[in-house]
Length: 133
Image (tube, rainbow, N blue to C red; front, side, top):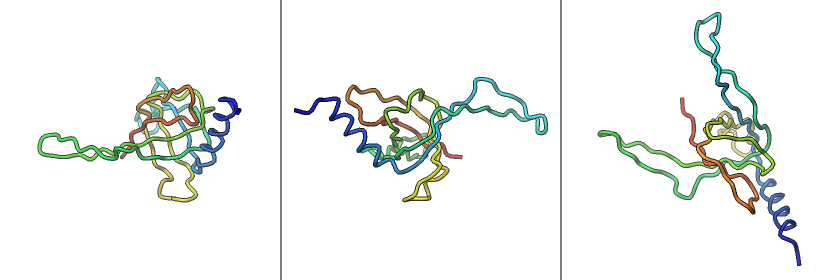
């Protein structure tokens, strides 16, 4: 009989083998500095994680909330990271830096909107919102 730990280790290896993209997770500093040349505030970023990842759409793909007479489309996404990628927090920004099978994904940015905790996790499946603009 195979142990649960061995089964989870195999599942994690399989999940990571499907993480073909590369990303960087960054966190904005609480301190804002002023650029001496422009006089504009600048944000300092700390790198939390750099490595393999995967973008995944959630099963419920779009919501259509209304505001006044305008209807917005909100797509739901997940970014999958290895379980070993620790320290990610809500508000961190994930930027896709390489995507060998779909170069359109390079440069996409997502804000982490929730965390993922599970006893038998094979990957961290972080709920995210795409940063547009």
